[in-house]
Length: 334
Ligand code: NDP
Image (cartoon, rainbow, N blue to C red; front, side, top):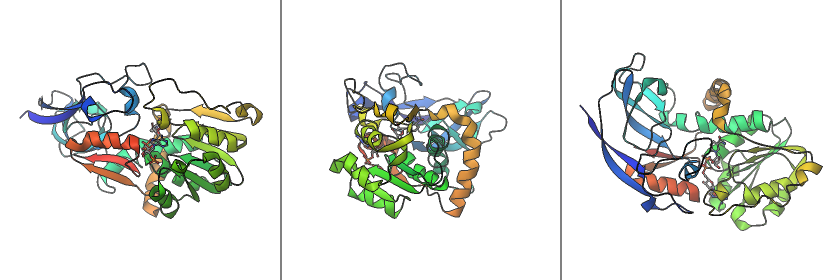
C-alpha cells in the first residue's frame, strides 16, 4: 500500500538567518519498494548546523539542497516493507533520508543497527557521526597528548559534549569549554566533564580564556571560528594544534568574513591549523564505535540530547540549533 508522508522542502534560499517561510511542509505519496529497496518509517532525525551551508547555491564538499525538493539528513527508523535481502521488515536502520516521515531507499544505503542495547537515536549523536567528529578531531587532526590543555568551543553542543569526554580519555590534564549563557556554562563543569567554562556572550573572550587556561592551550577544537579562533590563537602554546571543525559564528554571514587579525601568530608559535570533514575519516569509524560502546557502558560517555517532537516542529529545531536552543544533540522525534 503506498503511504502518505509529510516532508520538509526548501522553499527559498535564506538570506542571512533562515526564517520559517524559507521552508514548506509537503504531503507526498511514497510508492511501494521496488527490487532492492526498503520503505522506512522514520523515528528520529538529526538536525545539523552544516545544513545551513547547503541552503546556499554554492559548490562545496556536499551538493546544495534543491529548491522545492525535500531536505535530507541522517535518520533512524524501522523498515516497514522490504524487497531487499538482508534488510528485513522490522529492522532498525540508519540512513540519510531524514526530513520526511517515510523514506524509500536502496537497501545498500541503509545500515542495520542494534536497537537492543542503546536508544536508537544515539546512532545520530554520540555513537554516530557526531561522536566520530569529536574523535577524529582530537586523535587525527589535532592529536591530544596526555597532560595537555584542550579548549573546545560550542562546548555544550552535540560535538562539544562528546569532545570533552574524548579529550579526557586521551589524558588531557585540563579541558576548557565555551558556550552561550550561564546555564550551559554551569552544566559544562557540573555534567559534561569540563574543568572550566567560559560564557562567550559576556565578552572579553581572550581574557577569560587566559584565566581558564593559565598554562595556555595545546589543542583547540574549533566549532565556532571568528572571535573564538582569534582568542585561541592568542593563547595557543608553541607547537599547538587546531582542529577546524566548524565556523558556526559565520554560517549566516551575508558578506565575506575577514580572518583573525592575529593569524601570523601561527608562524612564530609553529602552530598547525587543519580543517577536516568527518566523512573523509570513515576508516576510524569502527575503532570509535568500539571505544564509544565501552565508554557508554562504563558511564564515561553520556548522550546528551535536546528533543523536539513532530515533523511540524522540525523547522523550529533547525532554526533553534543555529541560535543555541539545544544542549547536546538536537533531534526531532517523528
Ligand atoms: P551544536 O550542537 O554545537 O549546535 C550549534 C551550537 O552553536 C548552538 O547550540 C550554539 O550554542 C552555538 N552557536 C551558534 N551561534 C554561535 C556563535 N555566533 N558563536 C558561538 N557559538 C554559537 O552543533 P554540532 O555539534 O552538530 O556542530 C558543531 C560544529 O561542528 C558546527 O560548526 C558544525 O557545522 C560542525 N560540524 C563539522 C563536522 C565536520 O565534519 N567538520 C561534522 C559535524 C559538525 P551556544 O548556545 O553555546 O551559542
